[in-house]
Amino acid sequence: MNRIFALGIAMMGWLHGLAQDDNLDGYVHESTINLMVGYQVFSNHYLELGVAKRSTSYAVISTGGFLGGEVRLGEGWLLGPKIGVWYGGVLAAGAQLIAYTDLDKFAFRLRPEIGLGAGPAKFTYGYNIPLNASDFPGINSHCVSLTFFWDFR
Image (cartoon, rainbow, N blue to C red; front, side, top):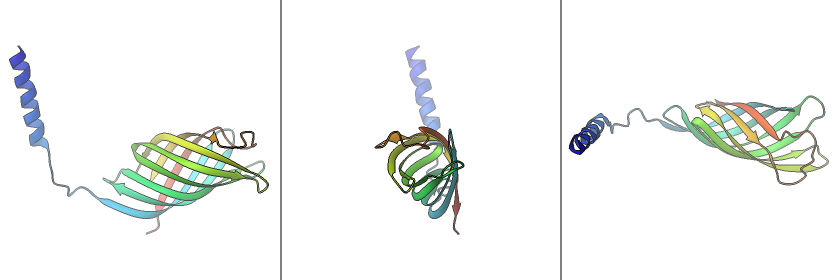
């Protein structure tokens, strides 16, 4: 019985090896500068805008970094300049450092994110970790974001 099992494993490995294709003609890697536009919602709504450098492989795997900002929509305004990085290839993950301000005082937040993302879009959940001023009004403790990246070309 063990010999039959070992033979089966060996045949599957051999067949798997035949199925491998080391031709990378389908591999495309490109780096582009993109306009980043997004919308965030939880208890407060924010619009985000920025410039991102995005690297794409196999049309769906994206990595990148960005400089941008978010602005609170609705009652009372709040501005949040930010810098961040992300990875997306069906599952998306990233982090942002945000400096929220009402031009009178500042509140810094670190936002790890996780969600779905491929190619020019990502849909993520983020948690704002207070680095100072935890009682700053108008900042979501949690947020859900939908972000798109448009190539400048």
